[in-house]
Length: 627
Image (cartoon, rainbow, N blue to C red; front, side, top):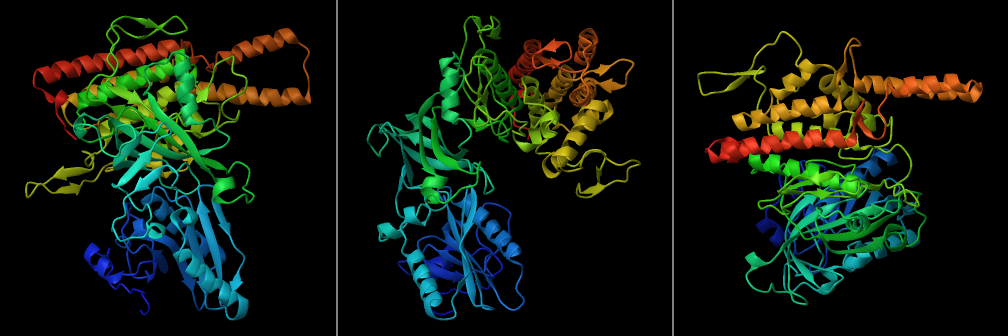
């Protein structure tokens, strides 16, 4: 291709060496990418027809500044073209953490005509069609394409207010130096004057209309200096988080500060927090943003860093300790801080090598009950208060909309939250913890023993016929929990975790091999019993009775709106009968309060930790990585 257009013929990512030869322009370059599989951090194989790429980076999604789709002949529908652009924009967002808005263009030679689109965390904004066959339309198109190539990072859609970075090539000019990719030459500047040198990215969420959360491991630098004071190994490691908060939610930093003001001491300390871009004001320049789609771009720095509890290098003992810490911290947040977390998942529990908090004596919560037992050591931390809500009676207004929200991380959401049958309660978070435990003990998993046998020649696994249909997927047991729609996931959990005990036991057989992981099965059974229990003589579990009672209550309420009944005594008797069939807000299950449920869960984990510690001291599997 002429004039800097590169035609790549290989059906694979382009090497760094070939890329550096192809792009030599000082400005971003237009490239034909139809036959190029762009470098990506995901398994996506989508390919735009053409891209505008930075000249100082290898060709890939991390170097893309604009994506384009061209149509000729029989044109696809406009909707299908926009969906393609959205797929490209998502890849750019995932590869470029500080890209706040992604430009894209649709061209066609059947008009000829084009459309410009700009994707952000609130959705997309498009232009009217521009006919560029001649006259003003052609001039407008040429001017637009030239202008895009010369836009500085802030105008092109990058966040630059709180970061600075070194150009990959010293000769790169300031206007064409972009914060691209998973950068290791990045410095984050805090509102208190301190700085953080980014070491690596540890999390990036997919999607477009979302929080777009990105988390980095960073090194806290000395005040007003770009060089760490002393040995880098002695400098404190911190977690740096950027996310797009919905404007109708209270900020995560505000929830941390609220918890601290109410005496919660087990959460990670906040080192700094700030908010920057607003979609409506700064990204879309006051274009009308649909109600509920506006977001703020915020920074949060936590003075603690560890491994997520799903890290494959963690031992069974480290996993158990981190789970215990999460249960205790969650309880202090709820019983002392009167804050409900609502998003317990494998990404929001951190494992620590050394105990962070040691309690030498009993400490009471505001309710007068001891959240911490004697000499409690916390080898973990609970993070991410994005979905947390204030549940204190004295709050002047709710910290989240009073609606039935489906909040949480999808595979770990409680049944009644998936079905939007009632507001989020403490017992729903405990249910999420059960799903976290099951996930941790299963993944990464091997082929089901009922689905494979090992041959004597080369230990090759082959499927074996079974007399009945397997309940759990042979290589991905919990696949339905992250692949089906909410109602189907809820039905799957209700049937195979709650109702049919044999199905639950079959899942426990899929736990990782070894005596250490086998000990987790007893904890899983106890948690299931703590959340649900079959009522003798009915054949129904408590959850079924609860949902039946809620349905009856809804029907009777609708009947009351049509025909009023003045018999107060009869109404009182009926309401008492209903209460026996459903769980109240202060109960984990019928007749068992939130506090009793917490104590039962905590005791089971404390026993598990003691057993694994003894196993480790004896030189067993408790301290070995068996993943």
